[in-house]
Amino acid sequence: MTNQNEITSLLDILPIEYHDIDTTDLIEIVTDLGRPLEFRYTTGYTFVEDEIITEEFIQSVVARVSRFAPDNRAGISGTLHRISRIIDREGNIVGLTCRVGQPHIGTVEIIKDLINEGYNILLLGSPGAGKTTKLRDVARYCANELKRRVVICDTSNEIAGDGQVPHPAVGRSRRLQVPFNKRQEEVMLEIVENHMPETIVIDEISTRQEAEACRTIAQRGVQLVATAHGRTLDDLIKNPPLMNLIGGIQTVCLSDSQAAARGTSKSIRERQFPATFTAIVEIEGFDRVRIHKDIDAVVDANLNGGEAVGELRILTSDGRVLVQGNAEIKTTEIAQVEKYFLQTNKK
Image (cartoon, helix red, strand yellow):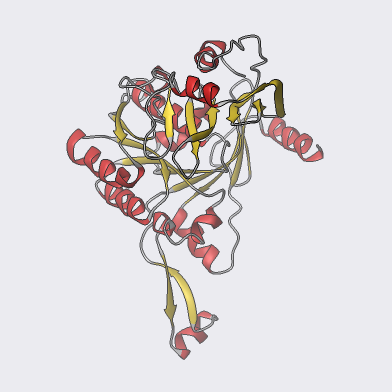
């Protein structure tokens, strides 16, 4: 559900007033040169056929947002909204994607136990699954409720919003802005060296250098909570730049006797070192996640032909966490949990 106070600031950047537009479940506003204005929702989209986007329309929007960074992203000061531009070969802006950004307090509930126990947590999920939203609430919870020293490594101001003052949604967390993507690993290490964090929150780990920086930070005893590209643990195992996050994968050639003793072929894949992240959270929906713990054992089993099933959790509308699978959360609502999942499977 879209918060009207948050959405008004996004609608205000349009040159024509659209405050009467339905903002329920609004995801993006799209302005492409020569095409109708488009409002995208979780359930579909709406075109404003009589509003064809012109250069003047686009420039009017650009004048109302912050300066675009080298990653072609801008924002609106004091908000979580993200403005991304499309440019032609001459550098002219021919399209804008104005993505709705807003806080959702309470999404941390579904993984609160992992945070309390000090796990290094890596959030995975498809674009728009809610990784950054959950990450933002993690920062707030750690800083405000656990009273930890939390520092956010904020690429493109995705987590704490645009402007010099972090958005209230991150609570008392501090924030270091990343000037451009290629410097993210430098800022990550700067946080550890200069600001004495207990927890570091990072969005979009995507390179080998950033994965190595995560490993360095974890070795210094700092808790990491981050997101990465990919939907599942298996995606990480198959992704060379990111496999270091889960221990690195190497191919080893065994002798005939070793292969015979193990019952494997002579060429096998093995984990190189302990995983940086000790819990993987696959976000399957806004209120549904699948959790893998003891990552070293899970990765080893996967490399030996096993399948990581994980622990499925559902966050109900009244804030309860329902658990299915190898649950480590004890609950007195077993019957309700089984009934819920039975109904879900029937649907």
